[in-house]
Image (cartoon, rainbow, N blue to C red; front, side):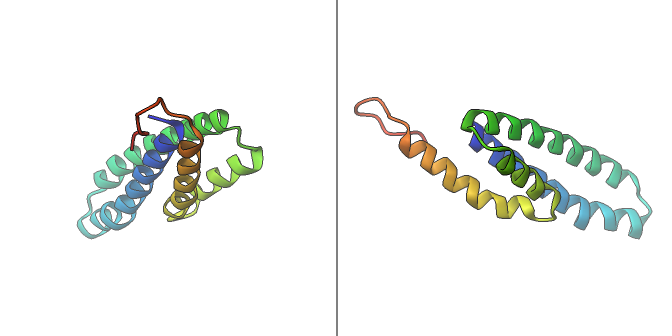
Length: 111
């Protein structure tokens, strides 16, 4: 899997885990007095955030991102729903990278 696709997937999963934490685990904790829901969902969210940062480093190094671009991507992960907004620019960049990569004669790029 290329670095941008990996970053997009991890960002999506990290964003979804945040939504699960916010809209499922927190209500379960406070409405049903079940703090374990937040502990489990929060741990998954934290692990996915660490994977996001790791994927960010990989994408930044493979695509020669500036510090400003890397910090902007990182900043988007800190803003609620920022990962979903970020996906649009990462998808465009991934498409540009795929279209500029030469393919073997008679083959088409993978999707």
